[in-house]
Amino acid sequence: MTYKTITVSQLTEAIKMTLEGAPYLNNIRVSGEISDFTYRVQSGHMYFTLKDEFAVLRCVMFRYQNQKLTFKPQDGEKVVCTGRISLYAQSGQYQLYVDNILKEGVGDLYAEAEKLKKALAEKGLFDKKLKRPLKAYPKKIGVITSQTGDALRDIINITKLRYPLCELLVYPSTVQGKESLKTLLDGIDYFNKKNKVDTIIIGRGGGSAEDLEPFNKEEIAYALRASEIPVISAVGHETDVTICDFAADVRASTPSHAAELATPDKTEIKKQLDSELYKITLKIKKKLSDDKNKIDMFASSHALSSYENQINDRRLLIDGVSSKMNDKISYLLLKKKNEFEKAAAKLEATSPLKVLSSGYAYVEKDGAPKSKAADFKSGDNIKITMNDGAVVSTVDEVILNGK
Image (cartoon, rainbow, N blue to C red):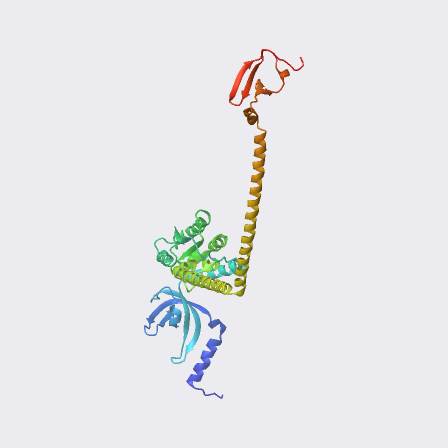
């Protein structure tokens, strides 16, 4: 039998390629108990062993992966690790390169949540077309979270700093445990039906998979989609995105981030207003300058000078016409005065008073003047008016001419 001679490194590399080339070893989940846990402070990497009653497995979790963990692994802790199998050539040992660590029992919750996410996604509950935009300048924001948690304090602080005009309304909810799902659903219903707001923030700070279980329920997804008010999910857990995050209109990485997404920044608003004011001021100044230039040009133009001469000519014409009108009016007044004096003289010539002054008199009967003797009879009361007065008398006898 003929053997091929190879180096240790060649053999090790061949074994490594075989392990890494096996699909079922590239994405596996391994359960076991942690032992010999070591955290290298300088590099930030974690080294430990997974064991059960029959075998042990060397494991390594690099810094960029373990920073996402929500708990610190400890010896004796039963966990489920996900990752890939490969060979470390320098030690000649195969080991598990870990992507994530879940406490034992959490793996089942995680798998159940992933299955539900897929089912809800197929029903269209996470469709981007259903996402509603947030109100740019909200007057009221409703917050559904623990009344005593850091999440609420962060939201209050950020909102006051960014947009103090906004009013925060809090619906106190438990965010983990058996009653938490009901209180979260009650909060969504409260802000939709009893105390309307412009935006809803629902969430909590970080936590384990068990802590986040209420936010991975089907009921949450349907409640958020049924809400008439846009909702921001603020579950502060970067490692796993919850169903609440997928179903909400907007996802925030933390409660503080949610407050930033929900409110405008007063500093930015002031900058925008100052910018607009500056633009408007420039436009007004330019308009005034342009108008002044136009006026100055018009004032010095030949057209205006000619127009002024025309006005002066019209003034002279008006003065001439006015003088002629005054002469005409004076002539007419004098003519009417002469006609009036002639009429007055004629009237005076025929005036009864003038006749009376010549020795004549006129007689009245019952207040009416009479000029014939036949108008009277014996016993009539008469009044005789003369130049210097009147005489009242009674007729004794009427004498007619020819009788």
